[in-house]
Image (tube, rainbow, N blue to C red; front, side, top):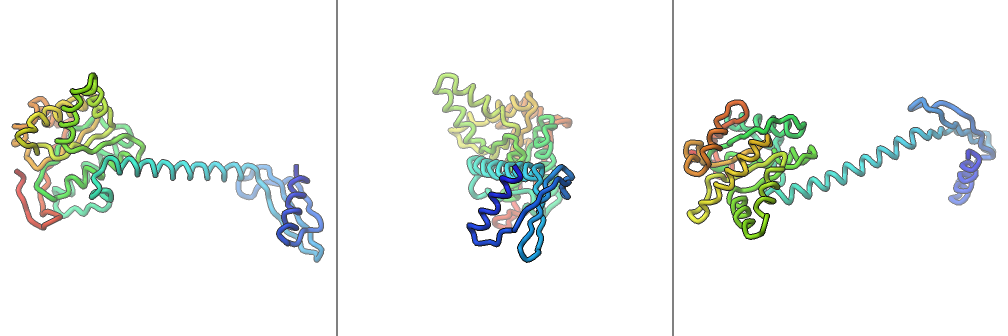
Length: 275
């Protein structure tokens, strides 16, 4: 095997017009990197020069494994980015916890809470939290919700972001197909992490929307899967929209949090009051 390698090396060097050694000797040695058994090649040239090189099978195998891991990581990163593009609004593709600037104490509290929750989901040790993030326009509620979804996806878990009206109409339309509604409900309940945005926003013809929002959130609560509800409305105002059972669970101090975010709009600089 060693002689075969040496012969091939000499032929390659001759082919590329590189001076070939007069002779090459080999002996067993220990790899200076990993300490495994290796082969030391000593090449001797006509002018008296010598060069040494160590061939370690263990290091080569580890190098190949590292390359495979790197390729796998790149593929996984591309898959995650594809998932993010399918889930996240285009305007918030760059949203992350690191680029969220908390200007007010309530914004900082929301940042800390959602980051901690997404970390728990990523580790698989969350208890199925239910969080309501309410506040005025433009204070970064959706930014934080999207950042949490992205963090969960990057950790290899499943996550989804959906506006309440979209969820409601999807559930309503699913009634048209046999078993479609149950399949869609299972889909929404199965995500490790779900963010439902714009809770409380519905026209008179969308009154059914929040029945479905409540149903999904309640099922997820019972199955201990974390859910974040984002709204411009305060909790007391959401009583007109949400199932009383869901409102009761939102007041569960062990597994639920209610965050009120107050501050200037990041778009206009205006201070709005929550509805």
